[in-house]
Image 1 (tube, one colour):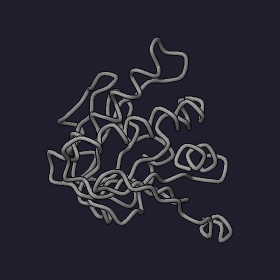
Image 2: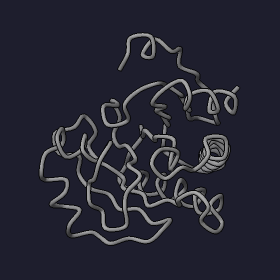
Image 3: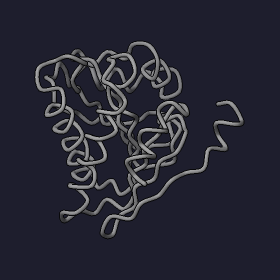
Image 4: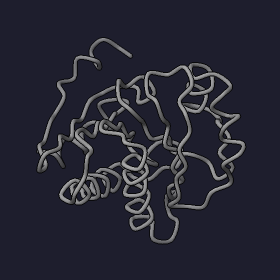
Length: 181
């Protein structure tokens, strides 16, 4: 990651007993119990972060996923993280832009990701801007829906202590920063 980007000042917001922290970071390298990967229906680890997971996590991740798929939009499955820092990867199939009810499906996907983390005893979880990359969910929509869903979830009874939102660059960071301000 470029040095200037890694120096982007994190933004924090307390919600009841939990913290939401926005950082510029690679979600696959986050020092958390679990991170979310925006999956494909067949759970194949393709390009981008999928390649990072395959290379850094090792073949055990895909082997485990081969037994868990396919999944439908809004669904999540949890695998081990292989050789990565995290213990678990939450593979979430969210909407693609211009799908019917993109907003509702994204909200469901975020909530289901947090529920799956909670079921595994995760207290620290990292999420990327879900769907805002390859699947072209607009960043403003992504930021609004994710922040609202995370806030709603953390206001309930939860053992999640920290939600880390890992923006890949300043372009992704900016709309999330505006929502957390």
